[in-house]
Length: 129
Image 1 (cartoon, rainbow, N blue to C red):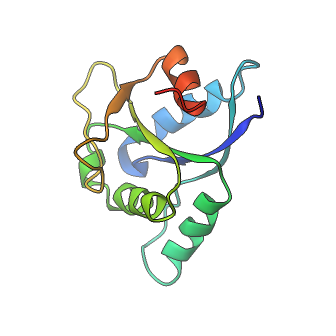
Image 2: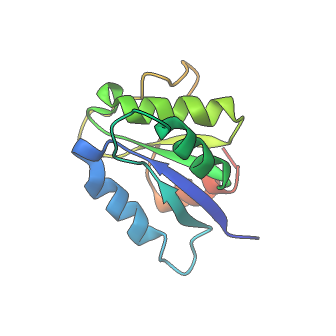
């Protein structure tokens, strides 16, 4: 099976450590994905949305890492909205096992936050949810 290119959406202000953990997992020899592009920490002015749209379009799926404050992260919500506008596959990961994590505001009521385990991650990447 081909390795999938993933766009990673996360709250830069609170969850960069989680993105780093996911980046580390992407280096595992059994990983079915590579991190191609990730969230942009820029003011949402000018062509920010266009840049993100192109980054998402050039990947196979979007992984949204949910943390304690993801529901307040405007950029994550916008990235998820763009992902859905592009009809791009995505899933949400529960970033902190010991904390209450929240969906981005743009998430739908049927969007589930999946437990971040190695088996779940591989299954979700391969579209087996």
